[in-house]
Image (cartoon, rainbow, N blue to C red; front, top):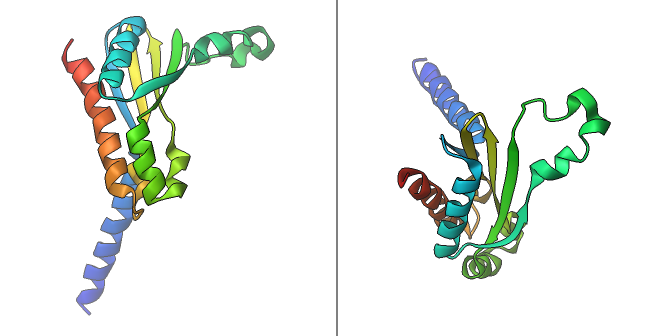
Length: 158
């Protein structure tokens, strides 16, 4: 009979870990610096890490075109800038394609910067939650950690 509480505890721990992993799928870093400066430094650092910016999206500018149409629903959080970099490392992409073509759904990758009241928030969707159990899991873990390390190096250099 004593084993039942231990089994219940085990399942609670497993489910709590799974729930935490689900809420931890987005990497977030904040820095009290202007978005334009951080964006340029991050752009250069990602390219130095061989993650080439293949597209730049000024999402905030595109959203602003609909401000009148959306009225009070426009940018309720009052972000002053919303920008994204679409990035790719061809070598990693090729390895993922070879190991698990389904994981190519994660390619290309996006780093998004939000700016408000002097703070830039950098967001990146982690790859490992989707890659768990995939033959490409180790490569995607390396990609995720390289990008996060690159973001953190830009922040720590300030």
